[in-house]
Image (cartoon, rainbow, N blue to C red; front, side, top):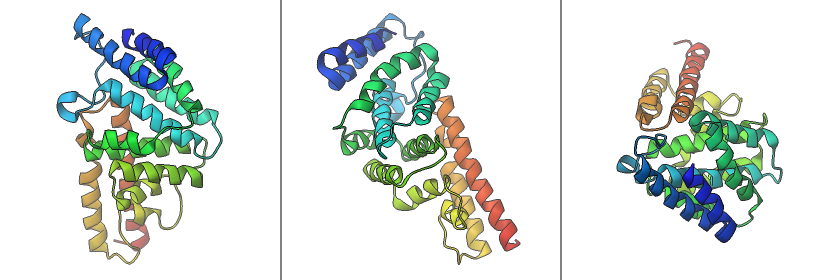
Length: 243
């Protein structure tokens, strides 16, 4: 709790940069008091090069960019982000997080490039794919992913270093159209059954939840959802193409 108090104090003095500094200093102080008492980091520094505190604050900033993309701060999207933090860290932590997040929503000059580039240099590729899936989940929370939200997530995706085919694959998981199954598997509609099977095996390896064992349980659940979409796409094509 010390880190969140420090973040709030830092924000009141130096706004968002102060919140980051306060959060990090508070985290270090908490770590000295009790290394066993703190919650497990979403990404460990030894594996990822980004601390839990850094990740949370930058993820909140990306979430706020997506929520504001269509000019409408939707309550269902806010609730989705809040529920994520409740599930990941508990209600007390989530309440503290949202004191900073609610201020981020009001800011007009957040840099998607700066935030996403910071994460890109410190996170594994499969983890960045999961961040992208999380951002689409926020956009879909109100039942519809708008074009401005798609453009914003596409913009963030580029700065995260995610290739366009992977972006289109994850995007297709949130839209229902005749081409969705092909896009999820990253193949053309002219693909042969053999090519579909090969693509499926490739996507299973790419999106298998075991690749995200270093992440928090809530994120692993999201990875399982993504993996399930790949399986459903393959089964749909099996049925349609009769193989």
